[in-house]
Structures are given as C-alpha cells and as structure tokens.
Image 1 (cartoon, rainbow, N blue to C red):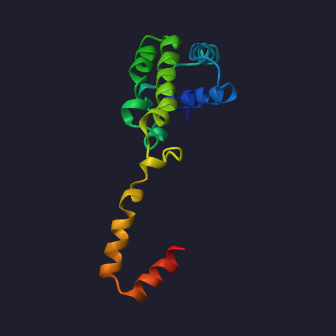
Image 2 (cartoon, one colour):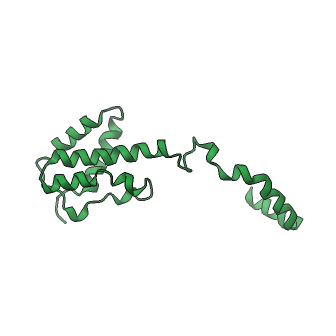
Length: 141
C-alpha cells in the first residue's frame, strides 16, 4: 500500500479539522486541506469514494463533491480537490438537520408508533388470548 492519501482519508481529515473548529468557515477548511496535502501525490481515481457515509446520508449527498474532486485530481489542482471535499462535508453535515431523519431524537413527531398505538392495542386485545397478551407485555418491559 502506498502512502498516497485516498479521498476517504482526506474526507476524514476534513471531519477532524471541522470537529476541532466547528464554527470555522468552509473556506478556511478548504485552505487548510490544500496546505496539508499540496506537497503529496494526488489520490488515485480508482478510490474516489467515501463508503463509510453510505448509511448516514443518501448517496447523492455525500457524493455531491466527488465530480469536483475528480476534476481536481485529473487537473492536479488541490484547490478543486479541497472544494469537492468541502461540498460533500457540507452535505453530510446538513443532511440530518434538514431531512427529518427518523432516527433524529429531536423529531418526536416522526414516531410512527405514536399514531397507531391505540389501534394496535385494540387488535392485540381482540385477537390475542389474555395469557399471551400478559406474557408479551412482560417481555416488552
């Protein structure tokens, strides 16, 4: 394995920089990526992906900047690479806030069980014998 950073490595570094300075601008983040990586070889285009974000944000979000990253690699322009990384980072950061993801704890209204709990209870009472119902309730608690 070579010492060449992959796009995923650069993206993870951007996350680290962002975590250290969450109020920093994306422009400053891009400039820092350029300064840190400009003396290194460009990533291989065969690894133009950020696979760890497949289950966190839709593919169209985390891949938003990859065409610009590819252009940067092809033109050997670290500014384009950094710009593409920042676009993907911005999309990944903003997706949970804007999407209303069901696993977002601040979105109580997204709880689907809330609206059907009483109907489900009625059905279970109607079709499930009392002793099975008591056992099910014990197991849930």
